[in-house]
Image (cartoon, rainbow, N blue to C red; front, side, top):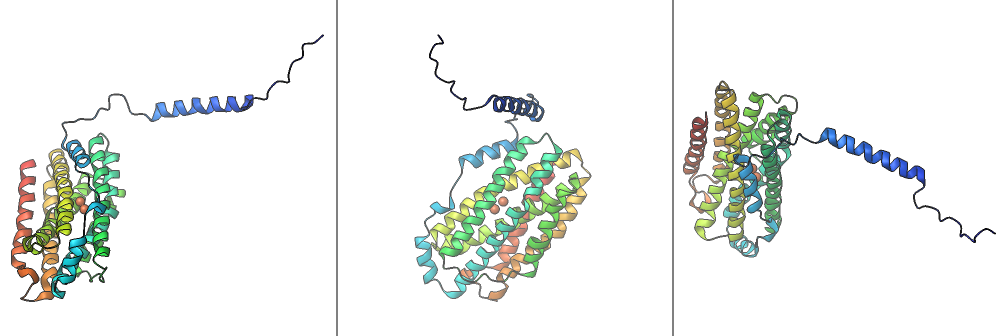
Length: 307
Ligand SMILES: [Fe+2]
Ligand SMILES: [Fe+2]
């Protein structure tokens, strides 16, 4: 007599599913073996871009944590002309941070294609994240102050941010030659970050910090400036590397910087133009032009040392 066996329980995975799964895993393993870098790819902790990357992790901040309550009170008590110049400066920063966030990625792609520069790729991911955060900060500030209408940007501002910057960076998508990289970094990291933005932070400090006004704004701008110091340091480093491998690029670099410096100085002058001889907060346009020129000289000296 046959033993009383219960019917076989159907498997949750029919055998042909198991075969397909095994084949897929084998395929995945083979693909990964081909894709993974050689085990000799190790990070060089001595390289500046990697120490800047570590600093970016240590010094992370959140624009949402900055208290703007006192700033709103100060803003409401300020005169119309004072509000106008702070709004003009902040609008330029908001527009500028949006532009640099839009336009950085082609540099990262060019560095990737060049190969062997993983530390720089890693640094650039922090820069892109920080530029986005700067957009968030200035956007938050703008809304917190009651969103006055954005003032129109001057012609030199539009030339730099809407023409020169996107052209120099998007060129890297089809031309990642060392010369194209030098011209892109000169535009982005040296003129925009190293000259123009630095002069803008100086404006906030003289207008607000010196008068004990808008402490949240002063703090937020200081944190943006701290991030930007790393971006400028990377730009100088990358230019130094490119110049050492191809010294003849020095002339291209100088041509680019000398073409863009007048534009940056015009943007500074145009910021003060609407106020005539009586600039709010007692700011002196000539002092800001001198400050921007000094920033340019500092960057130039650093580049000369790295040749
Ligand atoms: Fe930024
Ligand atoms: Fe930046």
